[in-house]
Image (cartoon, rainbow, N blue to C red; front, side):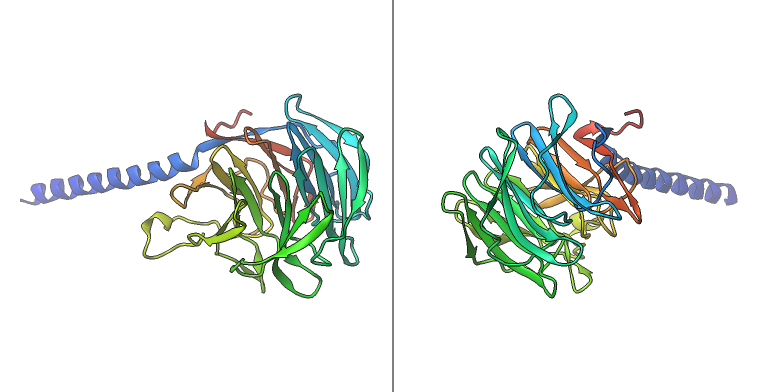
Length: 334
């Protein structure tokens, strides 16, 4: 009788071990989907809080802070060739936490923090002539740590910090008239250092902080109707088991879109990588960035390829770059 009880206990223990191993295996499998590959090291000085935009197969990166100086140098990355070329310096004062977007064949960059004050100036860049020209100052006045995005014909800037308060206003830039107009309807929290990514005709906004708290609300913006829709929070919901492993809350993160999915990675508090599916409004954990953990990195994507680069880890400023392959299996050899 004692022998039978021992055998029963051993059988139950083995079954429990198999079940637990199976659960861990599924989690590990999810976290090992997506491969980070080392890309071309940035040719400029190491920095955090740079600004970037993409035109075709070229990514443009400039400004930032290297721990000593606020920068205004400007660089072009060739997605096809995998190399960097220095371009004409950004004409404004050196700064960090600027914002940028592209419309057609031009890039736009401005606002930010110059080491003393928040700024409001804005400029247009023409890659064909490698020249900058000033445009109308940002309509929302002084700002840093804002979010930015664009449609085929308009640019948008919103949220951020004005030197006194966090903000939640949004402004639309029309390049034809060189004017900024405030647009209304965003019902989310004030925030600075949030992220956006664009999938088709919708922009998704989230993360960031206000009053020292990382924010959980998540929103979509329809570029056609200029209307906002609140989506599921990016925090754990005790009534929804699909969110049990969520660890998405953060600020100072990098974000990008590839195909029909959005991605958030690095940042404060949590540095892992998450994939957003707009069809289900749920997130899936992906492989964590294989480089050193960081905040204030940036991302550039042409829709088919995406890179995360720069940033800082404490007082260490970085110049490395990584390409993300979201559906490849993680390997340590690249």
